[in-house]
Amino acid sequence: MSVDSPESLKSNPVVELKSGTGLRTTLIGIIVSFFLVLIKGAAGILGNSYALIADAIESLSDIFTSTIVLVGIRFASKPRDKTHPYGHGKAEPLAGMFVGLMLLGAGILIIIQSLQEILTPHHAPEPFTLIVLVAVVAVKEFLFRKIIVVGKGLESTAVTNDAWHHRSDAITSAAAFIGISIALIGGAGYEEADDYAALFASAVIMYNAIALFMPALKEVLDTAPPDSVHDEVRQLARSVEGVKDIEKCFVRKMGFEYFVDMHAIVDGRLTVTEGHRIAHAIKDKIRDKKPSISDVLVHIEPFEPEIFEKKSGEGNLFL
Image (cartoon, one colour):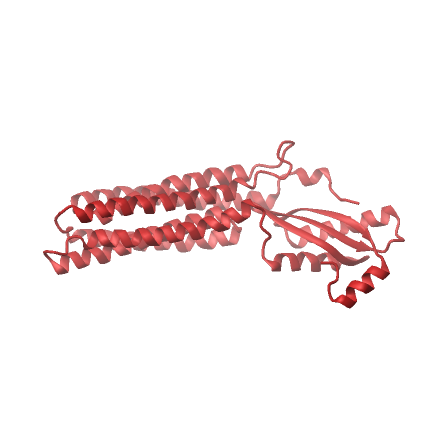
């Protein structure tokens, strides 16, 4: 016996709330990054600092990737329909994967340009570029701290990755600050210090890109969420009157929401109507206690004492 209903095809208010928060946060990041691109690009050109120019390029990629996140969140929040019965949630981790790939591409681009600058003699950067970099680091770190809290609260891979993109920008700026400082203090012969700083920052960016890409990929591949999610769902189902145990329980994440499939063990002598009532009670309790769970599919299994006792003795009850 399975439980489903037309109401499960309606949009989830939790998803609507989360997507709205994610959209606002991402939009703020885009606006701030736009102004930073202008400031860092101008300062890098006028101040003869490739590290600062590379930093501006990284911020430009922030705008592009944040826009992708914006589109991904908007699409993921669309309600389920006939062609997408499980919703459009996969768009959210796909956007997160794209952010990771773009971050990796930005790192590779900065490496190539940094090596070219190292091999090309040039003047040391201007001192005023340090002031610009301090301001950039402060702004980007502030953005990171604000957006990462939102991303984790929403359980959004895309928003979390977008936050780390801002942190990578802060790292790039900090590395540029160190490189330019060394070039200015060291004088002649240290002009390339700012290029080596950009090179180092690109390695950090690429490392973060891979670290951000993998969780999004796992979500797209329906990798099981943490055991704590399964344990809580099982415990809620077991607490329903009439449920003897839970045989199987599968949980998958789709964007901002979760879907659960489970087999509940009940007394085999119950009528179909009673079993159906228990199944609905399980579904209602789980969705009530965990609003992020959009739907619960419950299959009713009859209780068989001989199997129950055997598996209890083996210490492997209904895994």
